[in-house]
Length: 225
Image (cartoon, rainbow, N blue to C red):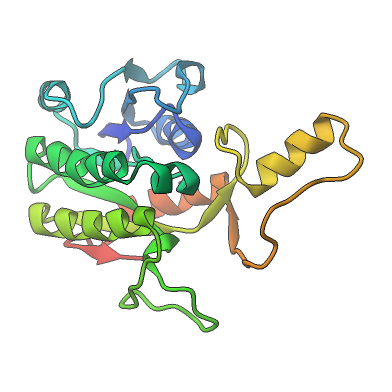
């Protein structure tokens, strides 16, 4: 990947900030695009170029064309489930229409990695396969529609269904950050919500390594993993 020009949407967020560092270490030129709705500019590596732009805006098309990227990694999304459920229209606008807006500015033969989610799957007590669908919330539904949009509009697409990520820079009150926050606040009893669900967790560094491996060795053409 050395010498490639890589655009990362949501690059000031949790996964994107780590991935940008990994990409720079690979010898790529990185442009981070983020509207800072959740992300923080201080998370962006010094060696990356940062532009505060919303993927739903008309400005994003000019940014993409000027940068002339070899690879686009699309991480930007509204994904915190309680917020998604409270604001379904906004979630759809960003996760689906924002993705479409981005794709309209990208050459259809550009390598395009779309960060999808385990939320596209139904809750089953058996191994999951790529052809299983059944999202139960608005976030999962927007990600599944987003996958279809990417396949339709991009000839060299890779779709990565990422499960529950943990690690530094997570700005949403997910389970592991919430436990750490309560312990740091001196809570003698950690208070949690619903303890029924089971989760497969993956560290953010492993996600970054997996994404880079997919970009190096993935098939493209709507390939899903």
